[in-house]
Structure formats: structure tokens, C-alpha cells
Amino acid sequence: MAEELAVPPVDRENLAFFFDLDGTLADIKPHPDQVFIPSDVRRLLQKLADMNNGALALISGRSMTELDQLAAPHHFPLAGVHGAERRDIRGQHHVVTLPQTLVAHLHQQLEAALATMPGTELEAKGMAFALHYRGAPEYEEEIMALAESIASEHKQLGLQPGKCVVELKPLGINKGAAIEAFMNEAPFAGRVPVFVGDDLTDEAGFYIVNQLNGISVKVGQGDTQAKWHLADVPSVHAWLEHVAQHQEQEKKILNKRREGYESLSRSI
Image 1 (tube, one colour):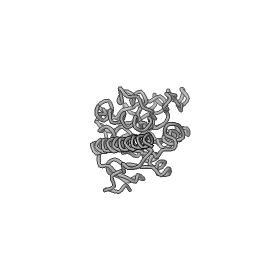
Image 2: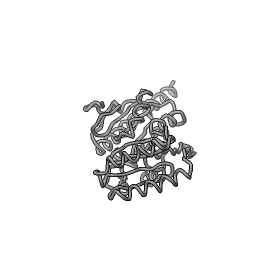
Image 3: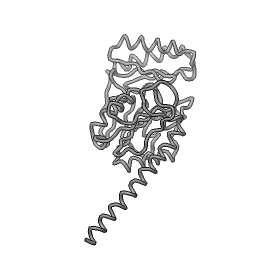
Image 4: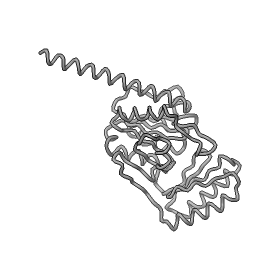
């Protein structure tokens, strides 16, 4: 359980940042299309990326196309659909797919099933499906039973429950694996990972970050493997600004020391 009074530290050096989006960088809305990242927060993310050699990525259940739209005009490394698709710092894409015949079959099956549950919504992501019931919470049990039935029938699929949603995705895909992949390549390799998230889908990321002796941060309440805690989305925004200010100040101090050393060397 995250320590309720434990604000994440800002004094660690050589950091690599990973952020969930919905419920972390942006407030959760009744419909996914209503979600946005405030412009000042987007600028803060870019500032942090610039100060850390580009070692900042968004890790989300959303598609990379959606992530780019929400982060625009900035262009970060991404892991979309919980890591089923990933874009590294060089712009190279790494994508896990399902057979198109299976995708078409599942789409038809899920669309027909959810049509009998007014207020629920099917989100097709190409290699994964999200079954939303935020608008009809009374169908939670039916949605979960449907997803479990399909996952048991198709062994290449895994279940990922979230806040008023359950997803069917390729087995073995999760945010922890995505973070681990980033940490094995530049510019993330050799840095201390920081992952901020709010949902059950983020627990696999917290686990990996803990294994790497990093900083795992839970947003909001609930049982978690995260070691640190932030109360809500505005707290995340305030913490981001604090981190950016701290790193900027440390950079100024370092530059002054270098200038002093160079001045001393010239006088000698």
C-alpha cells in the first residue's frame, strides 16, 4: 500500500519518466473523447523530456494515435494499448498483433453482445478491445462474465480490468513489459525509472519499477504495489512542476560550478 503521506522524491538524479494518461495526467471524463491534457502540463512534460535527454514516455491503454493527439504538438516515446504497440525514441514501432480473422470475429461477437446492454460501449483498438460500462455500471457483472468467457475460449487473449472497463488483449502484454522494454534501450537505459499511474492496469508497471529500484507512484486511493502516493490529478500536475523546477535549479548550480572550475583553470 502506498504511504498516504509519502510524496514522491524529486532529488534523485538520472531519471526516466513514465506516465499513464487517464486519471494521472488528465482527469477521467464520462466519455474518453472528452479527456484532455492541459496545455501547461503538456509544456511541463516537454520540459522534463528536454532536461532528461528525452527519457520520458506515455504508457496508456489508449492507442498511440490517440496519445499523439492528446500530447500535441509534442512527440514523445509511447506505449499504447498497454504496450501492444510501442514507439521508441527513434520513432521505430513495435507492434503485437492478433490474426485478422480472430479480430473480425471478436468485433462482431462483442458488438452484438454489448448491443443488448444499453449504455455500454465497445472500443476496438485493432489488436485489443475495451468493454466500457461507465455509463451503465449495472452491467458490470455481465460485462466481466462476457470477457472472461471469451478469454477462456481464446487462449492467446488476456484480461485487463480497469476503472469501469475491462479489456481483451494479447496475452502477456502489460505496462510493466512496456516499461522494461524502454529501460533496455536509449535514452532510458541506466536511469532510475519513475512511473505514475492510477489504475489496476498500472500495477504491472509499479511492479517492474520496484524491481528496478525506481519510484512507483499511485494516484488516488486503493491497494497498490506503488511505494509513493499522490492524491489526485491536480497533485500530479503540481508535483510535475516541482520536479521540473528542482531539476532546472540543479542544472543552474551545476553550470555555475563548471563556470567556476573553468575560470579557475584559466587563472592557473
